[in-house]
Image (tube, rainbow, N blue to C red):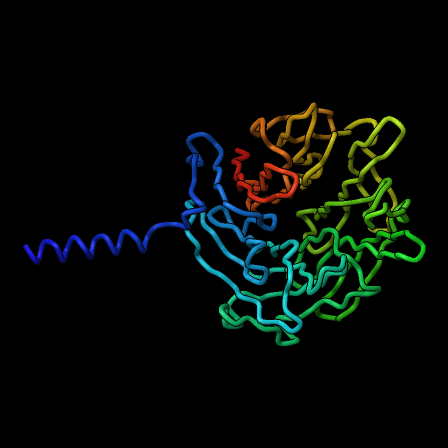
Length: 343
């Protein structure tokens, strides 16, 4: 009897140790229905896929901790950032194509200014992660920019959308920035109509830009050929959102205004040279859809009726999966992670 009770107790302990995070459990099985919803009980940073099996995000309540989750809900890894000054908010994350390196856009105070740091996984103790100035380092921030969006096309170079605020003149300037880790140099691309005014809360108003992706030709993967940027449009008739495609000199190759306009765009990604994936709100319904150069549209998913917003959009390097965050209220107090099969 004692032996039986002992075995029963050991079995109970093992079952507890294998349980996923209680606030993070799947309600669908990816593959059988093509979607997976993983509920969180709090606000998180927009998730990014590191492979077809897992993704990184950060709980906003934990401020300085990055977590890697698999598609069942188990936490596979966590990185605790020990930086000075201390991290107050992780605003977004980007991963290199091979998933070996991350960019973290973070703030150390409550201002709009933010900093980008590069983390090379496995090069420092993940429980007390510190910058070493070489592999794990901070990107110089010219003009105390607010980093609005970032992407990570190569291990040694990044691209981000930076916003420079001038509270004295109540204006802001947006530009695209390259940064090269090997040469420690930056390159700036001016965008058309890159100067905007601020409202009484100090937020951007007008036709400002947000969300970013870059296109690389597979025949020359080390070269960026185009930038894809979302744009807010304000007029006397109201506010809509669209996107533009810029070349590397800042010239407009395509303006979707009047062709593809939505109530909101939560995220955008290249699917290929002639096709784009978007998270959009249209007719008060949030959707994941694709559009192509032939004018064709394909809807992959429609959000629940109580969806307030889809925040962020990321593709796995294989292009098989996309991921976004479903937010249910204006204050993003709690959210779900949606992982969607595109096959």
